[in-house]
Every structure is written in C-alpha cells, then in structure tokens.
Length: 308
Image (cartoon, one colour):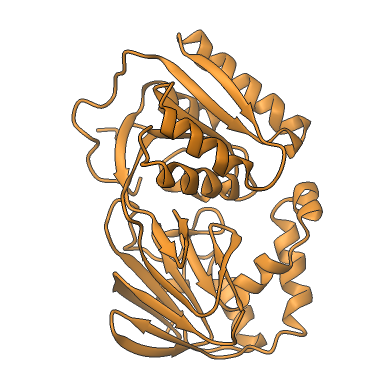
C-alpha cells in the first residue's frame, strides 16, 4: 500500500449508508460484479442507493451533488479510473465533504492497486470497515487527477483508443492502438519545467502514485498522500526506444533505465505542439500547454486498513 497512517478515529460511522455512482452501460458482467459487492455490503448492515450515469460527465455531476448534500456517510464509485476521475472532480468542486470509496470495475484499476486492493473482496472490506486516508490529487489546468497526468506518446494512445474496443478486449485495446500509432507518430520533443528548472523530453508522466497501466511500477517514490509529484522524463524518443520502454515496464526495469529521469516536484509546466493531448487517469483531461499543480484541497478515501 502507498499510504501513510489512517486518520485517527475515522473507521466507524453512525450513518451506515452509501451513495453508489455506477455507469449502467459498462456491461452485464460488471453489473453482476457490482450487485455481488453491494449484496455483501448490505449483508454487513450498509444501505446502498445506486445513482446511475447516462452520459459522459454524469459521474462528475452526481458526485458534486452528493458531496454537496452529504445525505449519506460515504460516496462509493463503481467503475474504472476514468469514472473515478470524473467523480473526484465533482467531489472536489463541492468541497469533498464525503469520504470516497471505490468498487474497481475498470480496465486497469490503477487506483485500486495504489490503495492496496488485491481483489473485489478487499474493495468490499475497505468500503465497509476500512480506514480513511488523506490523499492529495493533482490538477492539470482546470481538471483534477488522482494517479498521473502526462504528455507524449501515451497521451496520444489514450486520445486515439476506441472506447468500444476497450470495452470488448480491455487492456489489449491499448496494445493494439500503441502498435498502430507507433508507425505514424512523429515523436515530437517537449519542454518541461520542473519547479522552475527546464528539461527536454520525448514524453513525460507526472505521477501521484507509483503504478502505471495496472500494477507496473513507474515512479517508486510516488505516494498518493504526499503533497508532491514524481516527474518521469523519457529523454529518448523513437520507435526503438518505445519498444525498450514497453519491454522494461512489466519487468520493473523502467525506473532504472538511463534514459529515464525521475524528479520530485510541486509544479510542472509542459510545452510542446500546441493542442497536444494531456492524459490524466487514462482519459484526455487537458491540452498543451499545461500547468500541473496540487489540487486546492485533499480528498479523504477509504482503503484497506494497514496490516501489521
């Protein structure tokens, strides 16, 4: 787990109720997984009210209203990292008054990995009886993110991937898009200002958590609860280096490569081709140029209690 000590006295609540934000178009299999999770929560004495989304942006609006009204004790986001990102933006805009829990139903579920959730049982346990932790999101121009933001090849993959294909074949949709894009990508250079010092890179990822693309370590020193970023600069571009990076990531070797520079930061500015996409938590959240800072306020999230 990448979190420090939980908030004192925060594990128990008098009002045992969830507002659950869920996208019903996610598919029948995910709906069945959610139903099993909610049944387990109700068996433990929790009341669950489902708020269904209908279109992009609904999760943000529902989270804003739910957080503002605070008519339940916790807000539970059932979905992937993109849905969670929407909900986080809504909650933060309303003052982040409710603790957030997650039921991971997405493709990569990076936030679940960061919070120490190994499976759905961990997610249910955390929602019902976990500890509460303070995390610090980042903000790219006008949009908040929890995990990472970046520009370069990975942002173009995120901008290009077919959502229907992603729903059908999951992570393989990103692999397919990466292979197609690699043969026509121009690999531009980016200027990156890290706490006032300028650098140049072929791609850049500004990390809040240390995982990337699932449970692959990109930024070993990054922590959700620290009010700082870890900036990963990919100093070499081109197809050959792209292959090297892709092979090194699942082997845990990417942070050790000589062409990777890792820097701590509190403010990052990225410049490059104007209008280039900036991905955040697996969706396009901004376009270049972008300034990345910490969010205006932290979030309280429910996660498995630390063992031992």
